Image 1 (tube, helix red, strand yellow):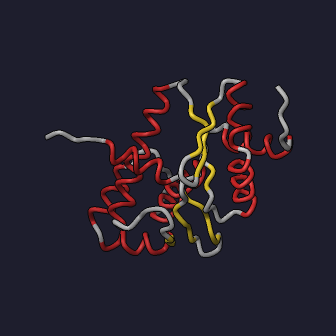
Image 2 (cartoon, rainbow, N blue to C red):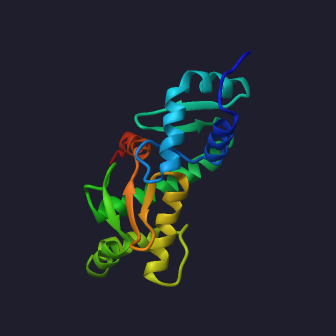
Length: 179
C-alpha cells in the first residue's frame, strides 16, 4: 500500500482524535481548522490508512472522529453524561446549537434567576468545583475537551458551539421516551 500523506499532519490528526475528541471545521483554532481541511481534502486516503490499522475515521457534516466498537460500557456512560449536559444547555437556551455563541458570565446570571437551570446543574454529578463559576467552567471544559465547543476568547470566557455538536443532537433526538 503506497500512501502519499504528510506524516506530521497524520500524526497530529491521530493524536487529536485518538482520545475520542471531535475535530470541527468551524473551530476557532486556526490549527484545528487547518487540520480539518487537510482531513477533508485527503479523507479517502486517510480513511483507508486508518482502516488498515483497524480504526474507523468518520467524516460528518463539518466534523470528524474515530468510531470505536470497543468498550461499549464506557461509551454508554459518556453518552448519559452528555445527555445531562445537553439537557442543561437546552434549558439555558433553546437556540443552543451549532454556531451559538455564549459567555460563562451570561450562564451564571441566568442560573441566579432560573431555579430549573440551577437544579439541572446540580443534577450533573460529573462536574467539579466549589463555586458556581467553577462548576460551569468544569462543565464547559468537558465539552471543550471532547471537541463539541471551542473557546473564542479565554479572557472573556466566550465560546462557540462547533459542528460536531450535530453528532450529539442527532443522538439526543433519536432517543424516544415512551410514557
